[in-house]
Amino acid sequence: MARRRQIIPWRAAGTRAEMRRNADEVVQDTGWVFNNVTGSALTLEQFVATGNAEVDVYLNRFGWSEMPPSMSILEIGSGIGRMTAALTRQFHSVFASDVDAAFLERCRETVSRFGDVTALRTVHIADGSSVHLEDNSVDLVFSYITLQHCKASDALRLTSEATRVAKPGGWIALNYRTYVPADAVLLPAGALMRVLWNVPVVGPKLSQWRWSTRLGWQANRLNPRRVLNLLETSRVEFDELVILHHPGRPASQATFMGEPVRQRDLDVANKSHWWLLARCR
Ligand SMILES: C[S@@+](CC[C@H](N)C(=O)[O-])C[C@H]1O[C@@H](n2cnc3c(N)ncnc32)[C@H](O)[C@@H]1O
Image (tube, rainbow, N blue to C red; front, side, top):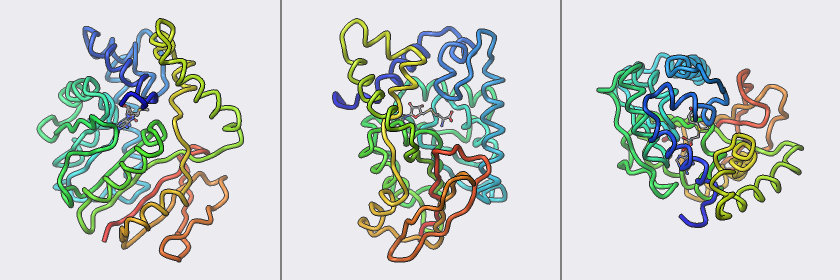
């Protein structure tokens, strides 16, 4: 784990979350790491409301709103449960997973208050890339604004893990960040910031500040071609495969098993984001 500098700000926020007296304080202090909203009067309820709205939108856009409630779903990178609460109201079994154990504890608290805690199981991704669930064990896998924050190799491994744990006929929806022109500056500045996070005395402070965290936590850029190459090499098979991206973004030239991949506009997508939406065979 020593070389995984990109995990530092999550651990720092997790430790702070552990030390707060109540969940509203957690949201006021560290909630911005999840939804970029700051304020000294924020409440957990307001925080969860942002997740409820996003879950509604994404389930709708993926065609998942009408999935049977008996289904199970794995959320990779649940944080403190901003979206998990809504997922537990929608699905019978929700596996919330995250690299930070303190976040998972807070996630349980969030779900107890705003979701259905009987539906929740937490899964600690202790090494940043292994999901301790059996092969072919969940119906749906969902990950939002998480895979861009991992080392590229961890994001790719988590992608493989998603396809491993999804049942045949199950769906995955994974969100990635790809290149934009500003990355010519942002990527080197972010890499420098991650080095500074390891410097004694100043590093621990820097890893908690919003501006430095936002700069350094963009740990990778993965384009569709790179992710699909990995899946091709691992001989994963899909019955359906589509790339979703911002309407203003040119279609990617990605292919899978020699065939062009279907592309669809996603009105709510960030310009630099794309989603892999696939049904496993
Ligand atoms: C921006 S937050 C998003 C959380 C949640 N999806 C949401 O929208 O509120 C990113 C989350 O990814 C988690 N994370 C970062 N690297 C990870 C890794 N390698 N494996 C699992 N989770 C990771 C962080 O701890 C954090 O909770």
